[in-house]
Image (cartoon, each protein chain N blue to C red):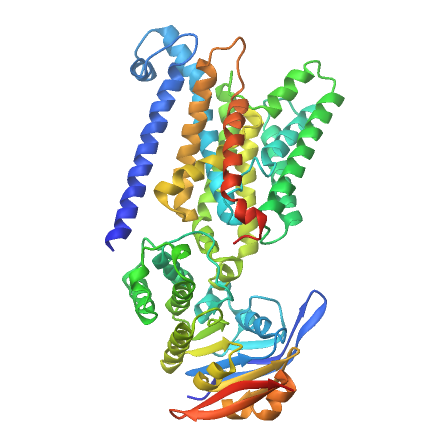
Length: 341
Length: 259
C-alpha cells in the first residue's frame, strides 16, 4: 500500500536522523568542558590523533560520561515508551511512578547499611529490586485499567515515600557528607563518572533494553485492550510483569550510577508520536534515540550554562520536564476529568 | 455436518465470590448463527468470555473436539475470534493495522510485515466489512459505525472457526445494524459458528438459526427463534409481550408492552 510504505519510509528516515543527532551530540559532549574541542578534533582524538593530554581528557575523563548519557537517556526513553504502551496512557513514565526514586532508595539503603561500597554490583542490584517493587505496588494499588488520575496519584505517593525513605536512610547513617549525598541521589548527575561506572550500569541497562524490546509486539496487541489482547493470544499478566521487570532493570542500573534523572521517559515518546505514529511497538527504538539525544543535550547544557557551581543534570531535566508534564495535563484534561474516553 | 463443534458441560463461573453462571451445558455446530439474548445482568458476556477461555470457569469446554483447558493461549486465539463490547482502541492506529492484529495468533505480530497469506486474509476481511477505504485512517477519527466495522473486520481476519461477538450492533444506526448482522450471517454461511450477544430480539429472530435465552446465569431456552422466543418465554424472562408477523419468509418480532 502506498501510504503504508510512506509511513515506513518516514519512520526509517526519522530513525536515521535521530541516530546522526545522537552521534553529533555525543561528539559535542566529548568536546565540552574546561578544555574545549570541536567535534572534528574530538573525532581525531578518539581515533588516536591529537596530543596525549587531549587523548586522556577525551578517552578517560569524558568518554564514560558520554557513554552513560547515551545509554541512560536511551533506556529512560525506552522505559517511558514501554510503560505508556503497557498502560495505554500517554502520561505514564518511570519518574512519575516513582521508579527512579525507589531505585535510589534501594541503592542508598545498601550503602547506609554498610552492605557494599558505591562501586559494587550490589548497588544496581538493590536499585533494580526496589524499582521493580515500586512499579509493581503502583500497578497493584491502581488496579487494572486504572484511569490517569489514579495512576498519577499513586505514583506521587510512591515517589514521595521513596524520596522520604532515602532522606531518612541518609540521616540515620554515619556518613559525614550526608547532605551532599542526598543531593546526589535525589538529583541525578553524570559528573566525574569513570569506566567503572559504565561497567556497573551497562549490563543492567542492556538486560532491561532486551527485555523491553522482546515485548514490543505484545504491546501493540495491547492497544486493543487487555481482553482483546488476551483473546489474540497475549498473556497479559505475564506481559505486565515482564515490562515492569525490564523497566526495573533499566532504571535500576541507571540510577545506581547517576541518581535520579526524571522526565526523559515521559517526553521522548511524545516527541516521536507526530513523526512515527502511535503504534507502541514502532515507538520503542525512536523513543530510545530521543531519550539519548535529550540527556546528551541536557548534560551539555549543564556544562555550558554559566554558573558558579555545577548544575545537576537531573535538575535541568526536571525544570524542562515538569512544565512539559503540565502541558500534557492540559491536553489530557478531558480524559482526566471523566473516565478515559 | 451437524456435529457439535463447541460444547460446554456444566459450566459455572464465580465472579467476586458470587456464582454468575450456573450449570450451563450447550452443544453448537458450525455453520450456525447463534443469538444469545437475555435481560441485563443475565450473564451473556460472562458466558462469552468463559467460552473463549478468558476467565476461569468450572466445567468442561470442548472446541473442535479438544478440551479448551488443553489448548495454549495461542491455540485458543486461533479458534476464537472475540469481539468485546465497546471494542476500544487505545491509540489512534490506522484501521488496517487494527485489522492486521487479527493475524496475531497466526504469528503475524507486525502489521508492516505480513506474509501473503496474512495479507490476503486482512484484505478479505476488510472487503467483507467494506472498510478498505479507511485503511490508513486512524481508528479514532472514524465514526462509530465505521469503527465497529473495522473491529468486526479484525475478528473476521482471525479466520477462526468460532466468532464470539458481544453486542456488535449496540450504538449503531439501523443500516449498520443490518450490515453487521449480514456480515455475521455470511460468516456463518461460510462454515463459521458465530455466537452473537444482542438485546435486539428483532435482529435475533431475523438472522439467527438458534436463539439461546439466558436468565440469572442460567440457560432457560434454546432452539429455533420461533420456539426460543415464544410468548411464554418473553413474558417470563423479559417481562414483555410481543407483536409478531412475517416478512420475506423471516419472523418479525417486536417487543410491545411490559407485563
